[in-house]
Length: 387
Image (tube, rainbow, N blue to C red; front, side, top):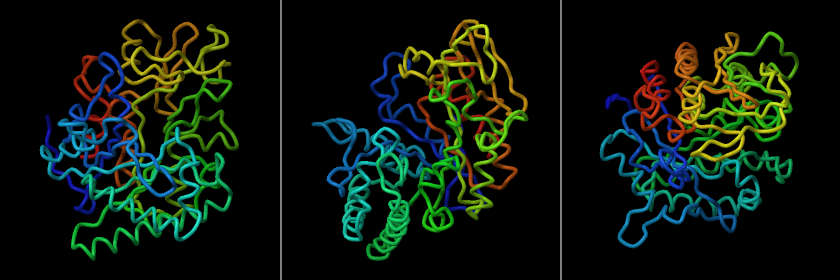
């Protein structure tokens, strides 16, 4: 196990944020993942996902055992305990996520008073459970039932969160709580959800969700996390890649390079082909692929599930233009990242002088070494290049 001497407090050094989804504790067999499976030396920051919001003002644990249960420590405390092994590690709590949508956030941002109450309770909650900060993951303001003007109220929320964190730090003489934000990667959600050039002023790091550019909502196959566009793409299609997302936030939103943390997926997005004999890009698809044996979610496969399929004889294709692979067999198709494509992305982050990378998520990488290439092959590749 390597000990990378990193700390976010040293300017110019890379950050590696590792999202940890507590839901993975419910998986069976080799998919079961608990906080003790996180390698704290491969991450500068761990983000515990997710907390919920209730009554428009309170954070609430999303799992029955996030908090202490009798004599047993909860998942929060067990994640914080990773700092005993790496004292430089920072552990943040993420609120939101795609599944809970906009509904819980709408009453939070409604008025200055509702925002103030939420911020006050957030600070209490984070300090009580010894987190180092908050990751805001509203997907997305101004959409999914959220009114158009919530976009502007969200800017106010982020500004007031940052001010509240700074004020509390001065009053208590403690390190300020960190504020990060998971940000959309495509122009559609960016335009509806944010005032990009304003929001960037309030966050310590902006975590770009530079993946999910294609998925089961499409009627044809496409790689969900290509680094670059393809030559046969035109119009809005040329936005569906990591390079476009990075350039947008750097140039249009004027985000400082050191604040930009680029997301790299440790899972693949899969499709069921309409005709198994047509298995290239833009092949007709009839929905998401079959769920994996451990993650069991239609349209998604963890990296360790994909490597099992490769060992079982799935065909692989390298997309040179996009620097990513896909695999297929029969009527199943999946676009994913391997160590080669993760390396290209990490080098791009380094060459552009960005703040670092994040992965969604640690438990979707081959955390146990099941595939035979050692533990955490994707995350380790990213770390080796950035460090």
